[in-house]
Image (cartoon, rainbow, N blue to C red):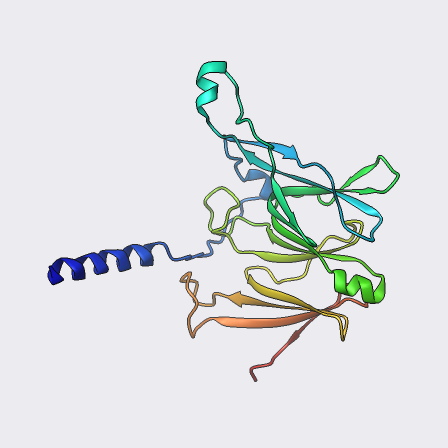
Length: 235
């Protein structure tokens, strides 16, 4: 019996290793427009979201995965009967599988897109503490903007970048370097900065080890040009 238990543990350990997030970077000239869209998805917009104390309404737009249900075999329906949601709103964060966001000023019917590029936004966060303190509004975005593993699509196996924009979606800008994976970010009200760190897979083996480099940055939120500075807390 002990022999079989040891074999089972070995198999489970092997499967766990196979499921590790090895996001290996493959250099490619593939443009964002060449990225494939999944056949079973359709672009839809969520109902608008209002962030408290601001003058803007948010319209999340994302890739909705078509679900099959027993009803379609009887009624011929094309889509799953649900609320067709592509994002979740919690406090000051909007998370989901978003391809774009549109901003609408209160008392206006004009919807302004955040970007015209092909990207995936997994989370956008309003820096409410900074807004309360300075009355200047910023959004931070966790974004996949490049098919870094050359599998023909943007997904969780690609490197993640960090973007920022003004409260109205303008000056949408990437602030992390190319080919560095976003690890974590944090706002600091005391000095009006956004801190973040990235991982550079220096040996390109898809794993974090001693040969790789962790980078540390901060963004000066009180400067109009979104100035990013690298700092070195480990030296």
